Image 1 (cartoon, rainbow, N blue to C red):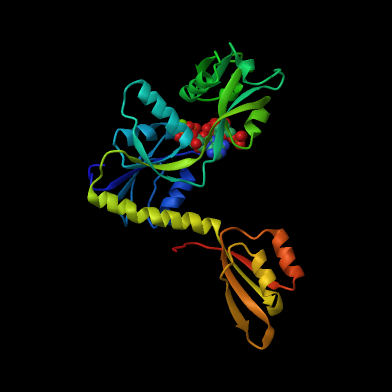
Image 2: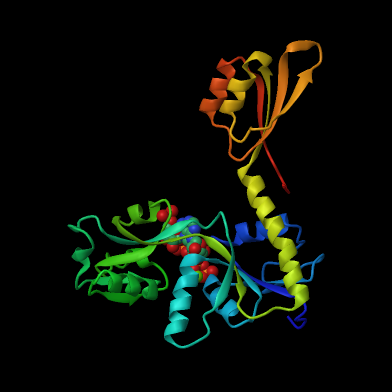
Length: 299
Ligand SMILES: Nc1ncnc2c1ncn2[C@@H]1O[C@H](COP(=O)(O)OP(=O)(O)OP(=O)(O)O)[C@@H](O)[C@H]1O
Ligand SMILES: O=P(O)(O)OC[C@H]1O[C@H](OP(=O)(O)OP(=O)(O)O)[C@H](O)[C@@H]1O
Ligand SMILES: [Mg+2]
């Protein structure tokens, strides 16, 4: 990391955010060769270096200006911000983009056999968590006098092990809670992955590179959410067909060789076409309905 002219981006080395973050960087045209045991990966076609670290370290690296950008879950970011504010360390950053992955929630959960009657049931109880600052902020807002037990892993087993009465941990499908005989009691923070930038001014070159990469990132996200739809439709039902297709105010309508009654319709839809809509189109006499993914998009 000797060349400070290169943009430094921190990414989780191994975990829930790694693959999506690295795929996004590759999708916006950054060529990377990531080798398993190395902490640093240099891009071969852009002045960019990746720092592959534990996600816990990413907020601090950005807030201390060690890296320029970081991909991080809002849960971890907010927790570290509160922790750093409490100890008087710099805690500023700029949020550049909210991303479409890493969606989860930080929730309180209690053993199935506990008679949970709302948050008051936790009065005077012990709660195990990896996020003590977020949890304590929540308890303060709710006027709950409970103690937090900090655990960096295996939080779900704390009640069974007699370490705590309840837990506060990340939930997505709820399968982990279920497997541990716990029920979700209250949601305290909703999170997804974000891209953040250090708060102090960057060089013009670095800022220009970021300004070039962000629209590409938006293009990738939009393309992921959009579909290219093609179908054959009876000319007489054109209006009804258009009203069924999401985002098709101005579709491309093309004649079909040798058939005056049918046209081909092409449309970029901001959402996928559901089976129900395809069945309605079919019922109107449409055929050859194709729904295709879009790789890149620039409006
Ligand atoms: N079940 C989930 N579904 C979706 N996103 C999740 C889920 N669990 C966690 N996340 C998000 O991914 C982030 C990283 O989760 P992961 O479990 O990989 O972290 P970790 O065990 O702390 O990894 P590290 O070794 O880097 O510290 C979380 O902080 C959260 O933002
Ligand atoms: O509600 P669920 O879909 O079950 O997801 C929740 C689990 O996912 C995360 O852990 P992960 O699986 O990433 O493993 P880790 O505990 O080793 O970080 C999180 O810490 C929960 O334990
Ligand atoms: Mg971590």
